[in-house]
Length: 348
Ligand code: B12
Ligand code: SF4
Ligand code: SF4
Image (tube, rainbow, N blue to C red; front, side):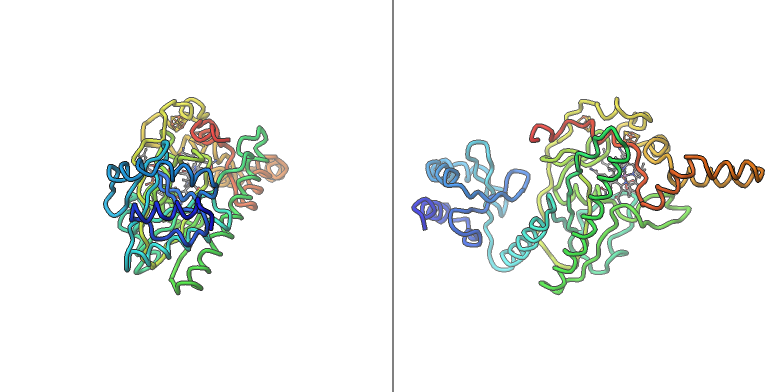
């Protein structure tokens, strides 16, 4: 063990609040940033900074007491150090094991929320999906740069890649939770399937956005999408619901939207005029021009057409686009509110 590592450990013991360093080996330390990311600092330089700032840490740590957690601030970075004992510690370690598994799969971020903290006005109750559910595990996947391609084919293809990956991750995480903790878990749909009924009219059974916000993965932006503090709007969301009781992550309090209104200005359908509401009909016209509405319109027109006109309709590109949208299960033609949002771009 290097001196630096020993110093770091001693420092932590003196602060008296770190119990889980050994899980990360020499000179790695367990750090949660302000937004509750896990950062594992592996560099000697980082450990040295901590060592030299020892008194600052103690002083700052006293200042940033957050209930059961303790925060220390060094050079603008918050270190949140858990004081964990007994059951809490076991829950915490279980959560960290899950977090590690999830991030190792290549998921970009993961957050945990108590079922009671999920409040979505139009969603079904969580009990409907899994009786006895305790925790929502929300996953964030970075959109590929494909979403910014001038070619809509490429943008759609990139989204499909992300969707396949997300499905595979959800499946593997579900299996892992069963294998490791004998947990009952269900995967929540990324988009479809959703209950098809007159009452619901295209509202999903479960809101991925509200789950992500509850799990501390981001906040709602002016465009009504979730903004992640690192990846901005360029994220897709997925979630699992489990009967495991896990420590929830803290919600992000800061408003991550910088209110530049670029999303509003670049919306071709003028669907974001009203704050806190997406005009769905206006959005769909541009984002899903070959979705269900268009399909119904096609067949209505077909029914009222002569045999000659019907033949022509089948060789029209509109029909081919409708068919393609259905067969690939991906109908989005507009990504403007995602790609015009500047939050998170500075890190690229
Ligand atoms: C159906 C659907 C659509 C429909 C209708 C959306 C709708 N109902 O608002 C249409 C076709 C319009 C659509 C468009 C888009 N969608 Co869409 N959509 C969905 C889907 C499948 C279900 C949405 C839903 O019914 N939610 C459930 C109900 C219960 O939510 P809700 O209560 O109606 O919530 C709305 C309001 O109450 C309001 N709201 C509630 N609380 C608060 C609080 C604050 C502070 C604010 C500001 C607003 C707000 O915000 C919500 C949006 O209007 C979700 C996936 C999912 N299952 O969640 C993806 C999803 C929301 N879509 C997504 C995306 C990216 C898009 C598009 C950019 C298209 C694209 N190219 O991908 C556009 C963006 C439109 C926009 N700016 O809002 C992503 C969002 C990712 C993110 N970063 O947040 C999701 C989560 C898919 C995913 N799994 O990643 N979508
Ligand atoms: S997807 Fe396109 S049409 Fe829909 S809200 Fe976003 S920018 Fe507007
Ligand atoms: S484009 Fe600007 S106003 Fe719109 S969500 Fe992003 S930061 Fe907020």
